[in-house]
Image 1 (cartoon, one colour):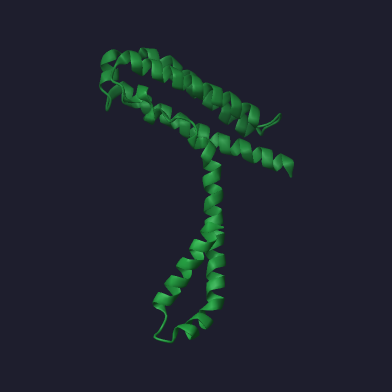
Image 2: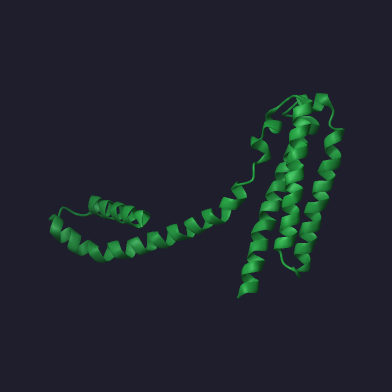
Length: 173
């Protein structure tokens, strides 16, 4: 409700600012229809944006790898521990996506989940192979590639989570 009121006030202010040099009462009479129409357009556009942010709220709840202490550390022990914990969390999320998709998801979605599981397994195997020297070199080499692969897995997992929610909505219709 506050957003609609704010939008209406902004629309009226903008309309008055660009109006001709007519008396205020005449300008308001001429603008009343336009304001209602413009307000409806703006509210419709902001409603879509608000829906998009609520869809993304649960995705943002996950602690992103790039913001974690493990990612920021150059100490091999802390980095490995942080990466192991993050990979474990991502593994749990993959299992949840698999369950959230329902009993009989489409075959392409099962393939997507299988790809997530394989990517997760690959990263789990690659983590112990990183040398302490590679871990200390944050912006190049094996560590940089590993960090980017985790980010790619997070993005793919986010996409799969959104799609699993859509399957539920389709099944309810």
